[in-house]
Image (spheres, rainbow, N blue to C red):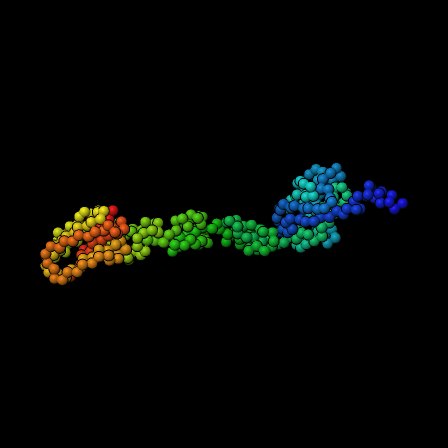
Length: 309
């Protein structure tokens, strides 16, 4: 007798054996005035079938209730796959805050299945995301009013300040992307070009300061009265530089060769020198680049550019 009863229940009362329940809803919160997509999952439920009367077809309906069926909200079902129901919920601006029960209609069981305290409605708030004000739906946004967010929310921009990229926070920076700023943002440097100091804009200039460049970038051809007939050959040169000049009056002379950074790599000192000075220097072991011949006496100094190829 018991066996027949169990067999009868198994054949005709399957839902008495397998319980139907909602297992999850994502997201599980939103803000007043938001329209959000929802994904609801359940066990042993049918979300579609001839017994469902949803406006979207034979798909389950879903709704939210608070405090024993008060403050009802209905969502809009869109589609279902296996034990998952998809839909949208438009939360009215005046909807009461707090926790809500999710209720989904089980097509096979022909009844509503409740997921208690599974969804929460929060006060609207806003975050600035990519220059736009977005309500995260958590009630934890940075701004409590849309106008405050819009006032402070600008697209990030960048300026190059001292070799670093900084967002001025005004939306008026020179660069609209960080990568563009980083590509073009280099510390100012200087090269000596034609006797003038020029920033190449690459950060690879010879001098790290303008003062250093100006000190070493003096290639003027001012001839002192006591120094004449300055001659350098060959120039440019691949290794050997010959240079000569004439000291008309007895002078203490200092003859230097400087590299492009202003470092002295050769020096010759002459006391009370008068007459023709000649010298020959081999640069074969030096790096290619720009060098300077500096002739200094009591009147001042003269610098001449040497180009080593």
